Length: 389
Picture 1 (tube, rainbow, N blue to C red):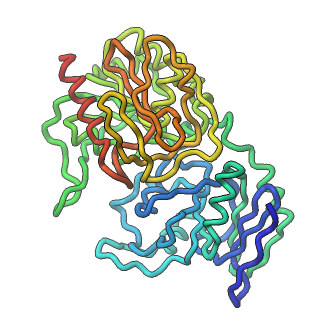
Picture 2 (picture 1 turned 180 degrees about the vertical axis):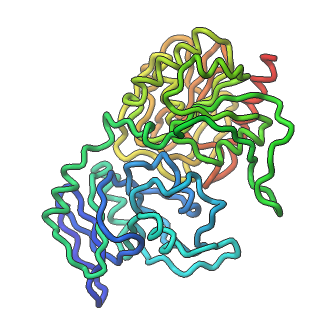
Picture 3 (picture 1 turned 60 degrees about the vertical axis):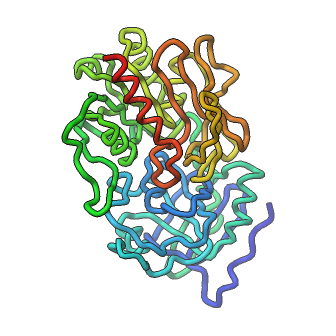
């Protein structure tokens, strides 16, 4: 791909995005000053930039937002999906505007600056997205310098030196350090997040990079949730006497995380009859534990408008997705069926054991951001726990 022409702005560019193939995109920097390296992906969601930036599944990635209006609703503490932004940086078409929303606590630019994340505006995101679709997710270096001084050769070298996500276990970097209880439910007008005061089911959630709204969805489905680190053992899970096991979303190469997660899941499957529900990386961990394989995708699925067909009902759901690896449905073993499939490319989006309440999906059914077509999955999990009792 030929080098992109510098920005047409009258002032000197204060940020640049250097791709490993030598392509350079110039623009206006905002947020933190400095540089970072990562894999570049694009997200097609029209809302939820704060939730996307704080989604632990984006560790090791810079996000290109295809929707141009980024920053117009500001930021606020309620919409964080983790304590801090996890995505390495953001690329947008238009510079973030001043917030115009009653919930805004601070502008996006200030929020990024305080949290050490770099942004670049004024980029031809349509051209960049086409390049990602055609050539795959590139390795990049993103730099912001208010004086506009960039060592382009050094930035390209940094992009080329980035190791990539294949073989990289990022779950250990974003998981909780110790166990904790979660009782906050989904946001409701006018009081915000209510507490689950009458739980019916005890759930142990394995945190590979869990989003807060996923935990809230479990609580809203009647669950008392205890969250354990990604490296938790089967003995630690069983000691809590759960009614069900939840495997969370998360970043990185599932095969790398599976080195320690898969044996634990297999032991739980072999020694208990507990219902199991997995999402995203948790879906991939379950698939690996059952004997399937995962593969790296060309550019992955990132957005809140992905159509998925549920083979169990025949319905089509519009879903929120964020993954760069996928389960190879051709490797699913006997006794495990494919339950959901992407209508964009036919890739696997869900599996279930045929004789046990053990199931998982590739997408994010908690809708943060995104549509709520798939919330029924949390209810299905609760029903499986109720049936076991």
